[in-house]
Image 1 (cartoon, one colour):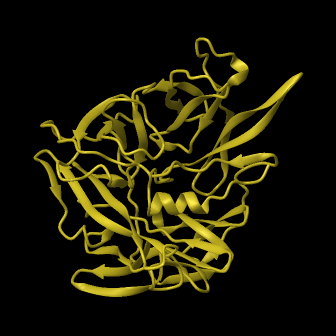
Image 2 (image 1 turned 180 degrees about the horizontal axis):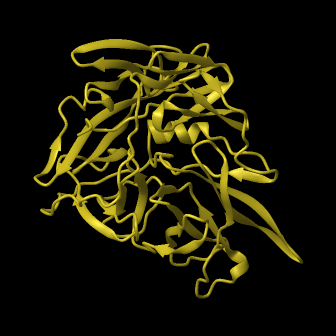
Image 3 (image 1 turned 90 degrees about the vertical axis):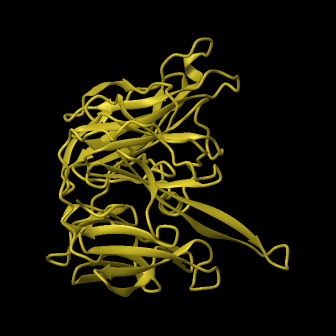
Length: 408
């Protein structure tokens, strides 16, 4: 079984997420107080990965390397990076400027499951990887089985466990039922895996979905938020908070434009402990691009894909329009100044990386490209590369670690 391509999904998760939003005012309750200790990201600015003509550029502080064979990067605390090169992953350590040995995160006959669109994958305390494999059944068609593997932040395996299959649905034979898992988030030793059960019979049945909780030793605990309208889940950049978008009514549906609300889940139980609504300003054509929590403030960033047509009917292109980052504290929602013009990832009290959209004819890739800058206090410096680029048939997806708000 071939590994699924991670590049298009990762690019969507970073730039063009499908989690569409509607209009819903916030409530009057305060922000939930954290119960999990945050992780110090310990980033040496500027830390980022960017697409260049020569390959994927990695930089952390003064350490810098270009990797022509890499496709994308997932950042770890301390500025270390999981670098995806072909069907292997290697850790780049900027302190020694060395690449660790290649590790394959899935076995022969397995496929790495893509992250959900609009759901940034973050490995803060553990690298949790979902796989699919075909399970042969005597006298019956094979079905997809799911496996979760946990690695520490050095990519040494901690445990590997089989995940449960679909639950019974009244009136649907079990052989028609399949379960799909997405990549999960690990917080305080518990991994939360979104799942949904699919009826392959062609007959309509009630949707079944939720979050599976897997414990620190790989033990399957229970399902939470079963059929409770959870659309997508985010782990805060510091690994201390679990947030989610939830439909106000009805069941989640692909890329449809629906009214959502922002909630916070208790990382110990999966229960809803904060209901934050949404800012009053946005339109449901906007998309949720990122969710984060820093101290007692919650941030949600929106963007929108706007389509344009030229004189030639075949000349159609898209532009990424930033709709801003809204901040929720005990006093309600406010728009973060300047966030409709640029995206910020804070890497310290005085340091942040910002990304600004560029036009369709600027550079070597059309569409929603973002150019990067390093802001240190009042000083600003342009950085080489973009967050999305391509040369020939190869696509490079950059990424930036950090928090959506200045650290407290």
